[in-house]
Length: 70
Figure 1 (cartoon, rainbow, N blue to C red):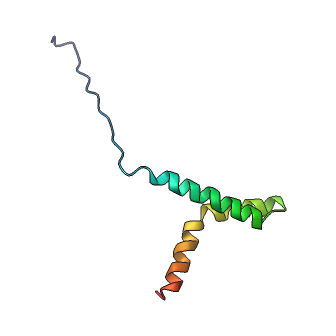
Figure 2 (cartoon, rainbow, N blue to C red):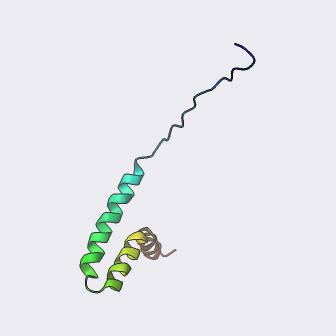
């Protein structure tokens, strides 16, 4: 090789344990459908249902901690 030539090294990034994102997405869609069914009506109730669907893991953890008396 001449001094002018640059060597390009191809690197790849391997992501392990990446399949849980699909599970979280299914949980989001399921809770969105549930909350839209409960809060159907006005525009602001639909927005409230969307926010609750995003925050459902926090609700689950909160109620689990209440159940365990922590």
